[in-house]
Structure formats: structure tokens, C-alpha cells
Image (cartoon, rainbow, N blue to C red; front, side, top):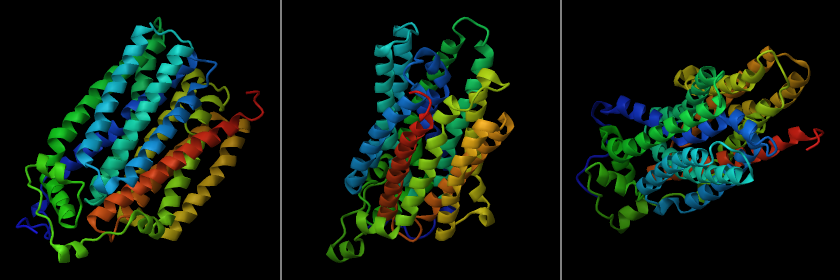
Length: 417
């Protein structure tokens, strides 16, 4: 198929650590804008007290993310991954800028019109997330496990970073006039700059890393058609078309076959995120009662969740702590549903210490199990199949998130709304 050697390992895995850093930053960029919106929800709760923004914004975001990822996954084998990911990061940059413009244009006033504008931006975040998260997880699924782990850790780090920034801005502006609004404006200014950085990194730096070029060339040699634009950006010509005999060897499993062979992993992703999003962030913002931390309480809970989620994504790097047994994963994931009564009774009868501990465990288990599933599932498949499977698992992740944010409304039963 060509003279490019794609069978041996890359020499000394050149660019591996640079690629891990870039993947971590790109993972951050995938959710930085959305986490910024989630983390300043105390501002939106103050601005739109009648519209339940902590729940509504997530509920608006999810159908657009889910609908887009289903369409993209169906056409995944023919998609130009480079255009897909660049479109997502550019859309994140534009919409982050629009949040800033909308707030400045309305001078921080609430009202239905402004809330509809924020909801429209939330929907755009969902479309961008579907492009980037599915595209990147699929792309990294046929590369080194450390690269996808770095990307997934970056996803969690975006939550931890935005929480830390929120605590800093709240402390800095707490006693000033319009302190909440000033913090929110600073947030989305930072978010816009960071998303622009991600566009530049993905467009110019990532495709030129030797380890990335190696894995993409390997995927192309196994029949992948989604990497040709990325290979060209890295200075590698697309390999010639295979003859009929080679074409038969390169035939890949269809999406249906891949899904049937990995239905347990797909259910794992669904159940992990259905549980997590039924509690986070809506329940933590609105249903945890009043405590001595006052207005800081919800922010501390969100921060503890995000930091724990980040820590959980690094635990599988220690091999003997990584859970790869398929049955074991399902048992652990199902046992997490005991957290629902635990949160209910803690909110009703427990103090803030117990709630912080539970929230930390929710985040820790979410991050740990996500990495275990997404790094174990692609093993043993060819590059194009690993790409397709990565996209399918992100579909089930987003279906789980949508189910979770819908179930989150059940906490409001008996509260008069």
C-alpha cells in the first residue's frame, strides 16, 4: 500500500509527552465553556430566579448534543475528522464570545428574552461538544491509551479549573457592586481566549507530532478514511488505494456488530452518566438545604466534585488499580445507584461534611470508571473499528447524561413546582 512503515513501533515514541499535554489541553477545551456556564450558575440563579437555570440550561444542552452525536456517529466512517473537530472548537470560541456580548449588551439585566438567548448559546455548546468529544475520543481510541486518558483527564480538569476560578472570582468580587456579574464576565473572557488557543493547537500543533502521525498512518493502513486531512496537515501524503485483495483484508465490522459485541461497555457509559447527572449539578445547587457555608456551599460542592472527578481519571494509570474485568465494571457501576438514597437522606438529615464526602465519592467514581471503560473497550480492534467504537460509546455517554438531567427533575417532586 505504500512505502511508509506503519507496522513497527514509532522510534522512541517521539512527541509522546508533548502529545499528552496537547490532549490534556484539548480535553479542557472540550468542556471549558460549558463548565464555565455551569460554574457561574449562582449568577444565573440570581438573574433568572423563576426559570430554574441550573436544570433548564443542562436540559437544553443535552438534546442538541445527543441529536448531533447520533448523526455524526452514523456517518463516522466517511467524516473528515479534522473538519469535524475544528468546527467544534471554533463554535466553542464563537459561542463563549457571544455569552460575553449578550451580557454586555443587556447590561446584566434578566428577563425572558435574555434567558432565551442564554438557552440558545447552551444549545450551541451542545452541538460543539458532540463534534469535539465524539471526534476526539474516536480519533484517540486508535492511539496510545495514555493519550485518551490525558484527553479524558483534561475534560475533568476543565471542571476543576473553572471551579477554582469561580471560588477566586467570588472571593475577589464578593463585596463589590455587581460582584456576581463581574465574576461571570471575567469567566467568559478567559473561556473565549482558551477556546481560541485550542483551535490553534488542534489546527497547527497536534497533527505535526510524530507519535500522532504514526498512529494516524497506521489507521490509514488499516483502511481508515477519516484521517486523510489530518495526515495531510502533518505533511504525510495519503496512502494509495488498496487493491481488491487488500480491500477484503481491510473490511471492518459495522457499527451494529461493534455495538452488539460491546453492549455491556455501552450500558456502562449510559449508567455512569445517568446517575451522575441525576445529582450533579441541579440537586447540588438547589436541594441541599442551608448550611454554615451559606452562599459558598453549592460552589464548594461543585468544586469537590470536579477535583475528585479529575483525581479519579488518573487512578487507572496505576495498573493494579485499573478495573478491566467486564463483569466487575458492571457490578461496580450498578452499585453506584446506592448513592441516590444516600444523597436523599444526607440532604434531609446529614450535615455539610457528609454531603461533601458523598459528592467527592460521586466525582471520584465517575472519573475512574469513565477512563476504565473508554481505555478497555477499543482493545483488540483495528484503527477504523476503534474510531467507530469510541464514537458509539460517546453516544451512550450523552444518552446517559440526557437521562440523568431529565431524572434530576424528580428531586423537585413535592416542592410545589
